[in-house]
Length: 122
Image (cartoon, rainbow, N blue to C red):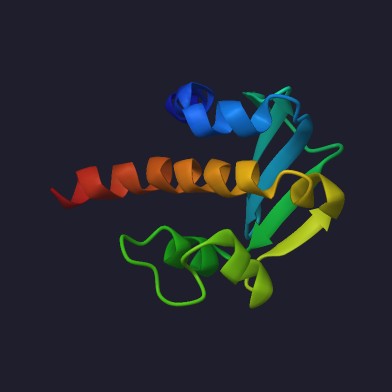
């Protein structure tokens, strides 16, 4: 998780889009969740999501999203939301208010999640 946090905070696109963005994000996969605090674009690990929003999907949905070449409907956040594969719980306006940040955040989360699988397959 610490590598992911470093990568998120070092990303130029997230820095540009997140300068004034403050919220909490949870990525929920089945009964597991990862929580993040975002304060003026700086990201840290959190213990819970008391405010902000959660992106909720089944483990199968997140596994498809994290594939090297995801199938149609699983290739990006907008598609997964539009098709109902991922649900937003909590403050939808927090997600919509900075959708570019959230999309990039999820792309980096996906890259971090895929790396252990790629190392395992070598």
